[in-house]
Length: 154
Picture (cartoon, rainbow, N blue to C red):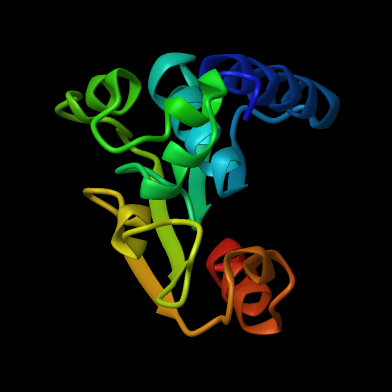
């Protein structure tokens, strides 16, 4: 949380550009978890990522903020507070994702993203609410991994 969302989005952009160059492709699929999902969203909306991404899968991203972000004073964490300037700016876009196929995956039992529905993005093609015990288990849960694989292979 010490790095800002725009700083993290720049890292996403750099890695995405390098992957596209390395593999000689114009588009890629992007999967982001938690703060990484928000940084990926910022990349899509503010760093021209939507011109280079086919699918975006957001796993437990605090897209409408999380009340737990009031626990730490770091700038990146403050940007994840409900109603932050960064979140208001992203929400102001009429067509935030263009042709990017957006999927949201979250757990109803999340104690990190509060409220849990903050993980749902407007205009998502699919929304999957799973019963994974905790936020951090989302990236290891076999059901989540299977769902992500199915979405990517569709």
